Length: 362
Ligand SMILES: NC(=O)C1=CN([C@@H]2O[C@H](COP(=O)(O)OP(=O)(O)OC[C@H]3O[C@@H](n4cnc5c(N)ncnc54)[C@H](OP(=O)(O)O)[C@@H]3O)[C@@H](O)[C@H]2O)C=CC1
Ligand SMILES: N[C@@H](CC(=O)OP(=O)(O)O)C(=O)O
Image (cartoon, rainbow, N blue to C red; front, side, top):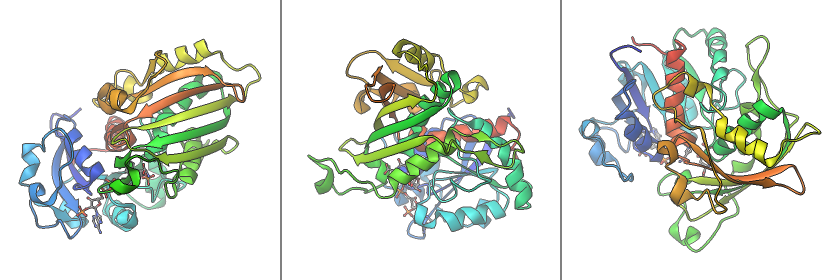
């Protein structure tokens, strides 16, 4: 690692994910916050005045006086890397302009996730997919620029648990997942209080198809020519996504069937999840949690309020592992939607990319 941190720009710095980026990057030794971008509504204001800061930790002193700029690459020329927490309605065009201007972009937005040459990476699941970055650069004639996306936040915890099981016990043929998703997943101000208080909303627009398609890509492999990905398209996935009155932390109730005729026992599944280590942990990246999957044996865990900050929000928590009378195994899994489900995943992806030599100082 170089002595000097890489200069980081943040697109969508004022939003829910943007605030997490600021919070996490302010103590990260690999990156130094250099430029903050948001909409024209915020541009020209000091970050402190432009932002409705919603995190329990205080706004870091060193960003308060930074002037927010519009998301034009010209303002980010000092940056070695750009993180995006942009609203998906405008992320596509803006992120494209940054890639074309030769910035490495690590994005949370959905726009490019399913593109052939774009790695969709959860750092606790498939950092090896970053190998396709060079093919992306070749195709678009880029030297330093590229885009890596992280996944939909509801699928994150499920993908981590299933990757561990797939590595050890082979393919999973069927997945049924019912999510209970936090309000912060919808950004700020998000779901009106009169809709979500004393209530559960059994619909999140566009969420279920994203969950299903992204899980297949995440659990897939880089193809033989290293030009794209072989998705697990034979895996049958059905997601039911619900909004619940929780501030942070997406919980999912998951039932799975293995392709093998000899599926593992509950004890074997627990042991496998407990021992799982991802490449980002083995590489010793700063933001990688010590434990990828914390398996709780109590009958009533995981719970969002108690377990979402596990591993500083970078670990996922699994509990209630038991036999399923329809498929093989069922369990609950929790992941912090704005940390390992969003900003934390992007940052750890960038740390892995840095170790791989894909990101470097100017
Ligand atoms: N919240 C979550 O748990 C997760 C979110 N995501 C994805 O991350 C992205 C950000 O989500 P979230 O932080 O929740 O959203 P927010 O609505 O809280 O924040 C959106 C950000 O985009 C900026 N923005 C809006 N319009 C423009 C524009 N025209 N030009 C430049 N910037 C603009 C806003 O700036 P301004 O303040 O100036 O309006 C703000 O900084 C989305 O794509 C979302 O789908 C992914 C995983 C999880
Ligand atoms: N839709 C998710 C958060 C999100 O923004 O997901 P995506 O980036 O896949 O649109 C939620 O509401 O909890």
